[in-house]
Length: 239
Image (cartoon, rainbow, N blue to C red; front, side, top):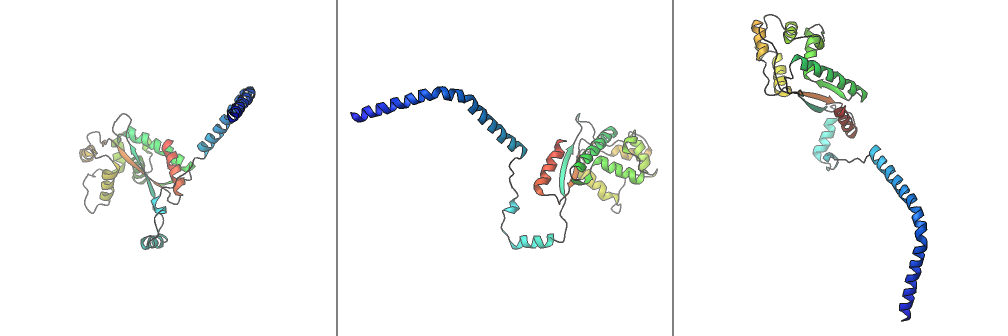
């Protein structure tokens, strides 16, 4: 009986103390909410500015073996391999990517990306692109004329090829490997260059090859730290 009375008194005392503290807690509630809100914002900002990183390269978790040791010995005598960044390019309206106006638009985009690459430690060291290849050909065979200065494909072909040129390539032709690579790797399988051949043969037609898409191969500096390189690549994709 005494225990029950003592328990009731303790409960009543606790309720009385809580009732007395309630006004003070009510006055402090905005301050408490403000402090925890500020703390949440600070932590969220820290995660945004410096997000956690994770190492997912399986090579870092593999045990040392004779093969890995041999790789390290060989690697000391050869430079690091380029890290390719592939860019699938097609026109927003689905038109011909090899039309002259399309190539000129891509050439403008290429210059933009090259400028952005320079801002990021010259991260891309080799650019293999359709407009870049065209400009290289003009630099070598067309006295350095800019791709943007041409108004039609016939004008370009007249600069690049002699009058007696044709589309025939033999196994001994040094252009064969380059042409095979370009058609198989850099352009869509629907590539049609027959208009070029017709123009070279008799000077007729539009001379405009067609393809629905092309591939840019951007080779990134292999000496960049893996995590840093991926960050720069993500930035380049977003510019």
